[in-house]
Amino acid sequence: MKTSIVYFSATYTTHRVVGHLAKQITEEITEYDITNHAPSKEIIIPKNELLIVGIPVYAGRIPEMAVDRIRQFKGERTPAIAVAVYGNRDYDDALLELSDLLADNGFQVISAGAFIAKHSIFPKVGAQRPDADDYQQINVFASESYKILNKNLEKLLPIHVPGNRPYKIPGSIPIYPSGTKTCKECGKCVELCPAGAIPKDRPKEVDETKCIKCGRCIVVCPTQSRKFQGMTYTMASMKFNLAYKERREPEMFFARYN
Image (tube, rainbow, N blue to C red; front, side, top):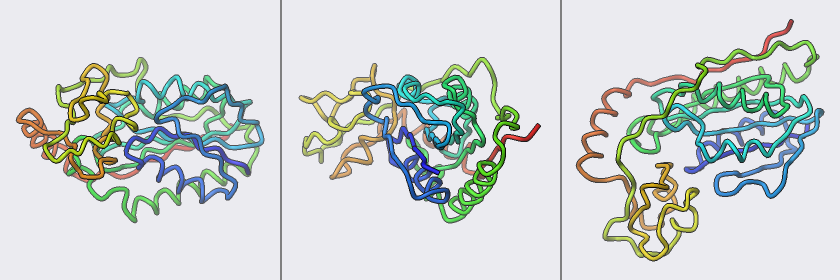
């Protein structure tokens, strides 16, 4: 089955997760990276193909800028798999929001999964994840999804995914990444910031009105000069690390037959 994968992946982890998932199902894969740009035109995924969409979870929701980009993909009762990747705290309403969005766009969500990765703001939480056990669970998820794909999709009931409607209102704390004195002002973070939040003439700084705290500027910095820092961050980090140190496991949901 020809498969398209769509992902918003600031720190590249969501891309790894959905890429690994897709390879367990098919070798014929088309990728759409919507992290920095929306597709230039509407893309139709035919009914006889598969769509896999992966998003990171930011404060329990889909990244706001990703929503309109996902809406560029339209289905024809096309089977789809929804994937949320989160930093070991909770995925809240994000997986439900993604499943609803895909259904509204003409896709039939056959399965949905929530997988764990290193937290993008507090990296001690979920450190080294996804690990070997996580990838094994992704393999199981792929296998069960593949079984559904080989049956009569017309008899599937709408999938049930945890979450609430209306979706939660995301919270926020005033912490943002910035450059340290070792910054060489190479402009890599300016070029790759999904939100355009780093001034070209002042790359050590950040426009707090635009920053989505995705962590991309940190992972792409060639001198590791960009980070979350300051007393507010230190205090928030201590509290967060303590509250969410217990390992969470992937959760998987599958559409059932009538």
